[in-house]
Amino acid sequence: LGDGTTDDRGEPVPAVGMTDVRAVSAGKWHSLFLKISGTAWASGANFYGQLGDGTTTDRSTPVRVLEDVQAVAAGEEHSLFLKTDGTVWGTGSNYVGQLGDSTEDSRILPVQVQGFTGVQSIAVGYAHSLFLKADGSAWATGLNSEGQLGDGSLERRNHPVQVLSGVRAIAAGAYWSLFLKTDGTVLAAGHNGGGQAGLGLANQRTPVVVYELGVDPGTAWQREQFGAGAGAVETAGWMADPDHDGVVNLLERAFNLPPLQSGSPLLAPGTGSAGLPRITARQKPFGPVLVVEYLRLKGWMAAGLEYTAQFSSAPEDGAGWMAANGVEKVESINDFWERVTLEDSVSVSPLRRFARVKVTAFP
View (cartoon, rainbow, N blue to C red):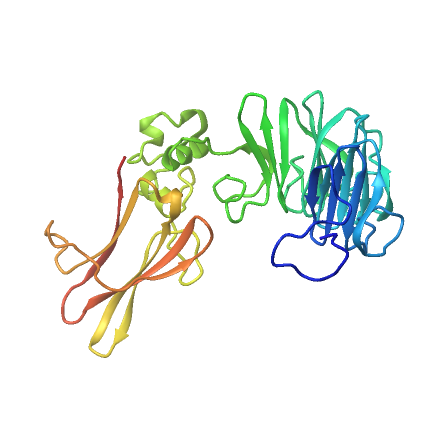
């Protein structure tokens, strides 16, 4: 916190000597400050040299690091400084090349990103760094385990590689990257296990367009799956079956299945994250009952869909299906999906008994 102590604080306290500050950035255990004068300061943990003061000594008050600086960015254990001449300097952990100096040696003093000028903004993630040049080109270096560099590979880089052109802003999450292009579209690359990159649920090694703001999730899904053909009702319509596996697009979307890949597996019990509903029997004191386990979209992604688990003893009678009245067991899978388990309240024996999950799409 830079307040001269190592005490946790429940309310804001001033950092010692930090007046006329125009920008700040926070890493995992360290803080960066940029004054109006262009001097950069740092405080906090310094075990990899991320403060850039020539030591690995932790600092409880800010120490001066560089001058002629126009922007600062703090990563997990490294720091970047963009100078007014368009050069970038880095210090701290460099075990995967996040400083971009063509080595993997940690630094206790800022070193220049090799052969790199004309930079207008910087961003850092857990262990990767992004750079935006004045010509609109976006570059990246460092950890690439989830494809966060966006260069089409999973190989780490110790010097910047160009990712995109026509970019006007960049941002880095822990293991993902975002790029705002001059045409107003947003592209993302990297880890997307919780949907944080806005890409559905798939990681991406190269930047792809994030779902458009103001577009309903159903339309966004059709565009993601069918591309230029998203408007063709015979292929991308909800009742179409382009992969000819007997499961229409509405159900493919509802149960996280690929609409252009033939085959419709059942949901794996207890652990599945894709598949059609699984119906089994469970023994109860009064006899066996049917149990339905199925996937369900949640939150904003469920807009326009309704799931209804139903049971019947006479499915041939159109009025024979009744909505389940038991208590749902709901397990969250991630930000977009949950797994639902529901028991029938009527014994299978001696009656016939059937179960299904009805999915309804509405505007």
